[in-house]
Length: 412
Image (cartoon, rainbow, N blue to C red):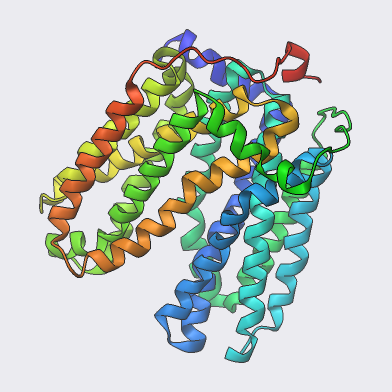
């Protein structure tokens, strides 16, 4: 890798605040990934029900639908204290899970997971807004790529750790671990040196302020196609994910082989996180995102081939291609949005991009029982390729909705 390519990564890693952000992502992501696995196993052990176990994931995902509303909280005050609070609150709530021991206590687990998901929406919006003020705009793609790498790394390490901890100490042990990671992450965010000015007092009705993020996304010629392409991509990714059991069965393996496929996919995502910054600079946001979606389209269609080497290569390609449009969309939101709106715009973009994934998973679970999974995978590949071609078209020149000076980008 050349000096020109690595230098921005070195600058990001050498920045004190960027390093603290990434450490916070690693620490809290480790606890979240461990709990994500353990909560479903916990419910399965208590009830024996697959459906009730699946509700754990739904409880954590459901608040994403309220992103435009929850995002307003990230624009009401300073973001650094909010980041600290959104780590300490779930840490305290997780301690209440120490009393969960029977099916009668499951309501408490679901309630904590729901609040956990809601604070996560606010946390992500506040973090994105604060990062945009603390990190040089030209380095945002590199930072977001490293953040993706850190997240995916935790998804590879944390689930087996959580499973082992659950086997040894039960769900309470995993809850304690997650609470500790949140407290540690709060301490890391408290060490940030970012200086923030107090936001202006909100004007207009609450509904108008809530919808301001959606209006900004829809009116912006750069953000609208990226967010729409991200939503379509995640819808197809959900449908693709629902086919995984049929794919493994077609390969002649037991369901446990899914772990191998996801590990290979995670390795691909680790790599693309390091390539995002250079890729965004060389190709531009839309062409970089379109290239990732095109790679995802090819890999999805080829999963219909029942051969292990092809399946493994396709999983690695999915790991490489899928994050491209997500990182491109988030980086563009940070660059193209005025600071006062950034929390709402980020949360709204997350809703529009990630909510379709849940719809795709649900629809795919029904579709795989009715139609050959090979036909579905080829159709998804075609749909993704159309999305990539549409996204790769040369966009009109975008104008910033509000001026941003260098001091706006990095007040510290």
